[in-house]
Length: 307
Image (cartoon, rainbow, N blue to C red; front, top):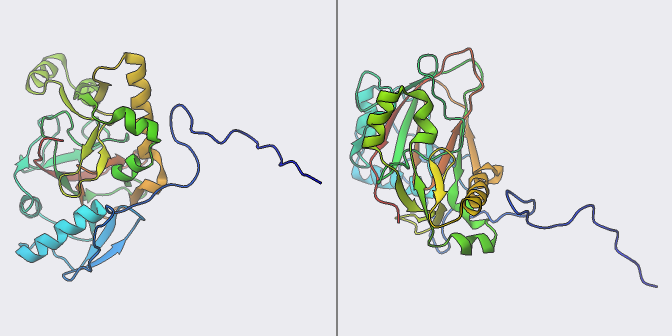
């Protein structure tokens, strides 16, 4: 006697746009990468592929070459590092970030006491970052990374999430990988910032930051991993595509950051510091704390041209 399998409730298929359910490939480091222990601090993972707390490092003090090298390896392997209870001055925050290269300023953001330190005070400046994005991809050389410190935290809420965009790429359907291989996209500061400036200031910023093109899929300069390098804040279209096709591909690529398997979520205390690799991640600042105040200060590290 033969039996008939019960009908599926719905087709198991990859949707035309967006995410799909099922197993996900979760690689934290490239195939063939040798995991080695850390000797100069204790690392506590917070996620499967992204995010780790670092214990036993005082960021207010200069880094030895060996400590700097080991932190750099941890950054590449975990993409975002968290340091509790640091309470750095602006000078100390800049000095720590400066171990990774030249610092960059962003005239689109307010500054604190130091012109190289951006102050993100939601009680004073009407901007927000509750959308998945990588920082300043509208520059020809987007930031390598950033060091963010929370000066004041609300009584509840105000978390930040980061997503591993190499894991997001790994889980794209093969036909999408083939479609975007070698493709380029336009990045523009206007979608993220235009609503916050009067026309005269906007015109000056447009002259300073004209639209730029970057690869849709970027190769990380250290690991060589492919990462999705388009984001909902600044990417406007895929070059050479009809508008409908470009919009569809971008919707699909933007949504890859939304899978929790690729994410880490961090709950802040005043004085905590996060240091992330902007080449490998996107982040999302949860805007759920009104009417309370949340004040953060950020130092950005200049990066290279994406390839």
